[in-house]
Image (tube, rainbow, N blue to C red):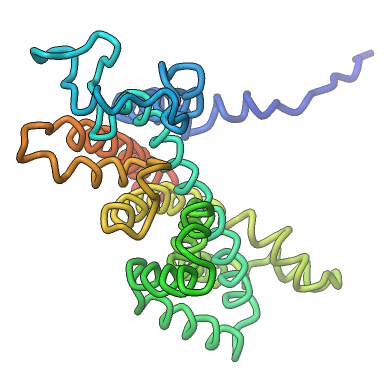
Length: 314
């Protein structure tokens, strides 16, 4: 007489460990290094109150007499400021930590807004088709004809004219999230629409229709999970693009004010002092921005190669 055996479903960690995603990650040194660098930057940025020796938002801790001090490896440095100070006398290491946190908040916030709008519109366009598809895609085409910079100029001018510059400066983070998010949602919409068009005529969708499920449930509970791979891939690219857009807008004076620094506003604040020899005010934050964006882009390239089965070479 045999005793029945029971099998347990593998846990999420076991499924991840046995997946090609994990197998590829273990063999790709570039992806491992980029993820480690990105995690270190995120932890350092969001631990800024603990790691930063001074608070750049506290005017009592700013000494204007200590402005433009060089980093520790240059003669004339002050041991209190390892990376030197900016033109206002703020510790550069501290404002880089706080500025990176602001840039990351804007980058992730803008991408979340892009995804909410783009995924919803892409699902509706691809699944419902017809006039809804035509209207949403023409709306996306119109939106893509306006650059993020143009949208920022128009929105910033309207807000400053109606609410005042003080209001814009106070809510600059939210304003940049809205501007970048509203300007870039068509990237998600087009990607999701293409995936939905490939999925909506498959058997599992037909079975859901036969069962009498509503279109909304079919779109979000059945079709959407099968379009997540391209969404993950484009999200990494869009995070890097959002961070670069914030830096560009801040450099042009349309983003974060210098009193609430981001990486872009730090680069802008030191640009006028390069000729006088205070190159570190711009170049060090610029190097941090390059490392941050490069690590995200390389992770995105690796993720695209892994999640695109046509690129898998076995």
